[in-house]
Image 1 (tube, one colour):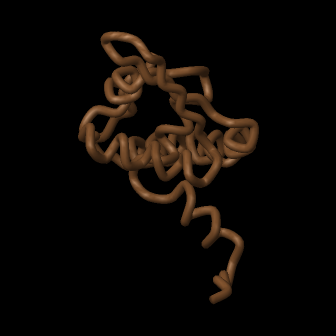
Image 2 (cartoon, helix red, strand yellow):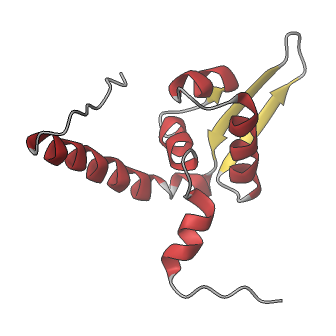
Image 3 (cartoon, one colour):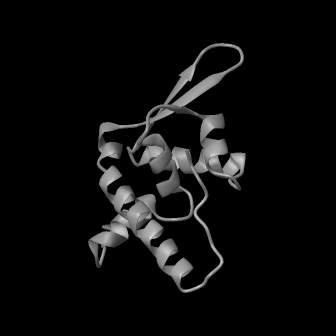
Length: 117
């Protein structure tokens, strides 16, 4: 059966929507990361959900997984060439989110953007 989208954004959200995928892409924009680095970069994500989200991004062609045959096991993730094309979307989302936080702070909302460096 043919899949039909009413808007192009539906296809985008199907791949990078949700709570964690855009964050994973954002973390991988700076280069290769191991599983532990990704987990530390996203406080609150469980190991199970992290692996599930990475597998989905891998199936969609945005992320490449490389496992090394060594003890202890080592797995690295990186954006594929196709995955790098999502950077523009994620960068715009990051900028919009930062502007949104500032606007809400000006309105008196008690929120902050944690220092991610």
